[in-house]
Length: 330
Image (cartoon, rainbow, N blue to C red; front, side, top):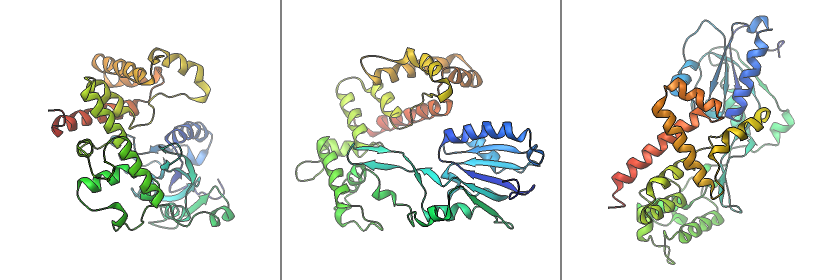
């Protein structure tokens, strides 16, 4: 790499996950101590959940050479200035719906040729640039030409629900640029019927109308409606909001036993959901008693992602507001 990458110009490295970014950042910080032409380099992570103030460092002018470690958020959503070199691992987390398990997954997959080309285009915008791909040319040639459109790799229950609520007609005849498969449409209808959102004629029910007002997966929305009917709405909004994010509990490979011990107080033999409520109470109590820096340190000590805990809290606040304003439970 030293023979290919020169001593000037910023570097952008594409990695699949936030965890990969943090681990690579730690390794790079150790490496640059022994590298004369990277000694003054600044390591900058970039991923969607990173606070805006931290993301802005990527765009700020600095006398130091920048090494930006990014997920595919820098592939097309953002343009990082000054990039002369790109290192592409060729992978990314890509959301896919599994009809068999009926869950939305985030597997790490090889990116398409179009995505790889897009990544290569991030360098050399203001002068000559170099892209180093950590996969072979033969591998590249055997990849899909384009990334599968999201409409074809997601659960369509929410899409069907909204098209019906907005009276846009049947989804089968909707003029999508990339029409979903018939099996995916059928699976979406099946999900809505099972939760009572549509009747046997595929018409929206009262439950369906209420669900269309909630900006969450219809299955989670149905949990919220049932909770309101059974007097446990406050607790369910906490659970519903955590189901919208990645698990905030961290379990690094080198500290698994310590992480398990730190997470033990949040476990409950009756239900994982009750465990989430215990974790929520722990975080909220800390939030009231400590400063932001103290809260961040406490999360680290208990192997909790500070950013995900904050995201959980933000989503919960938004859900509470939406439920109150919707008038569903009046």
